[in-house]
Length: 303
Image (cartoon, rainbow, N blue to C red):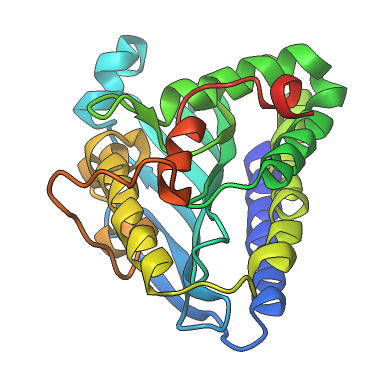
């Protein structure tokens, strides 16, 4: 079995496990699968859960796509790959809960290869997960980052966690707002030192997502909320849209490489609103969120 096939098999199994876990946590709705083929090469299976008891919308997508040439944005960043064919496989998910007290979340794990004349000229792993609360709880932020730190332990411990947490803070920064998308997590890209070790780390991140998120679902899914909290949730979802459409490199690569638009944009929330010049009431629970939308050493400050 080739290394690429091993990664692919892990990722298809990961999609299955995450979907089963999300359905179990929701308790009502089920995923519908949309299997698709890409004319340029490859395909995938996009799974969407709608109008659940816990999740307003959840998307978990698997893709295995290929092309004869990289899009301009990718080859400009890596000139040595100009003219190379490529193949990319990954799982990406975004969960948009109903309850405003339960954070939205995103995770992605992926593997990329570039080939020329039948030989691999470059490969790497990438991925991570991040958390976007509307009404943050310190115990949730601590659990999220403690889980992230623990899964990093066999791969460099505190140094790996610190580096990939910092990368997450920097990547998920809305520069035009000068605020982070949420409270961060882990992010890594271009990981290509030792295949077996790097693949093991990708598996740790993929498997660790459920350990990080499911306890938050149980804590917050039934928290009482009203119209005020719902309207704030919809307003803050607008930041999610801004990031994904303006700054996200995965969205840009997918669209420029001729990817499937519906699957690329499954990350967007089903309902969202914008309000000109919104300023939360000073001292309110809504105003408190601003304290969490900046890079912080959560484990040192809260733990």
